[in-house]
Image (cartoon, rainbow, N blue to C red; front, side, top):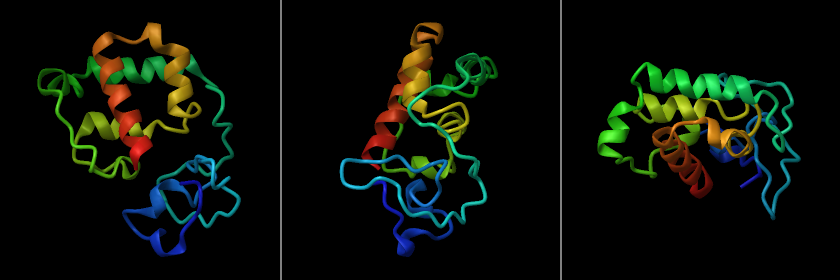
Length: 138
């Protein structure tokens, strides 16, 4: 929600990324003004979440996930439960974890996806959209 809640800033939750400047996404109510980043997995550099800093690398990363067949079972089944904590990158689904882990690396995932949409396969577009939708509801 864009606010670092200390009670949720614990192992495996890390308040959904709100306590780190590189993973906090502002909302209408909160503007990511307070940070206490203890999540060892995040990139602690400041990231401009309103641009895609490296669209070519974003495309290459998604192509690699697809080419290594990590996401193929999702094409076949296309089932994933959004109740899994997408922000933790430990959902148990290698494809979903790989996609959610890239959020912030090249910029905010939605902006990178929008900037590169036509360069990504239709199957990966569907999976990335699903991850983004899950991130939005968490």
